[in-house]
Image (cartoon, rainbow, N blue to C red; front, side, top):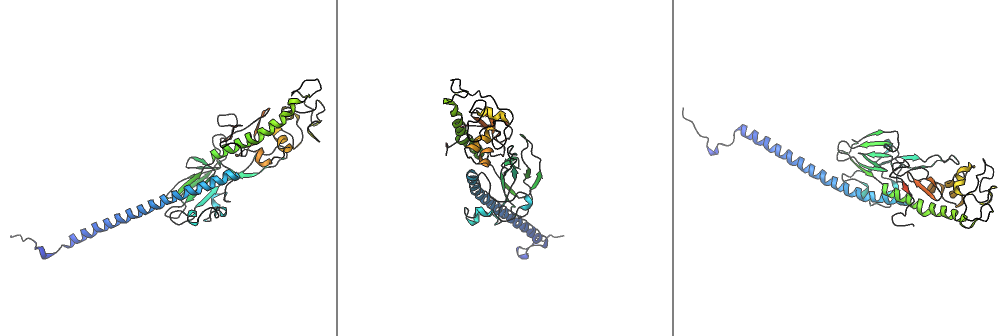
Length: 324
């Protein structure tokens, strides 16, 4: 049998055409996927760029107001409305991610410790209320990514100190992007400012009364040995600083042992009341706990882990940038 070679002008076989079509389709799909991937990467980078600018505004606002923008206190309340307070600060496009969707914003609030003097509490931003992919945060900005759907997961937690202070943990899933807002350094500096620049000054001012005072009439100055009054008898200072029947001027250490009625039950409340300080601002640290009396002219905060007596306590030190 004689074999005949195909003529150059005879064209492609059906099989060759089919194979070529399949290969071309694969190439086109690959190109489309690469194009989409590059586009999403570009949009993700743009989202990151916008987030860094937005976070700066949030942190600056926190430093000035000791609180956060927005009202969402539960992720079920999140809408595509960016906090209205931000509109005057941010150009329109910064309120949206790279895919043209509004960022979502989420944070938690908490009540301060119970004021032992009048049972008041205040609602504040819980700056350790979220755990975002392992980072303790005051808030989180969320992009739903290219699919525009919520993929991240969340789980509630009963706060415990010092190891688990958050109320809710969030985990990135799917193509969502989660950006924690952390204000620990800012909170520490606020605590130092309140402790050093305000409370320390008032404590020293009151203690200076004893530098030239003969407390019990024995001719000796600079005494702090007043005998505490019993119960509420002679509790200072009604109508002035010098009504303690035992010796006159009452030291802060003595006041700590009086058990007097509000608002001067404890040295901190005594200082706040007598120097007209803002109760919410100067009674509580940024984490919502009362500043801790250490005796004499010393107070401290339990710090970021909200447990007093360890290495992260905030003491009365000159804050970064000095006193305002």
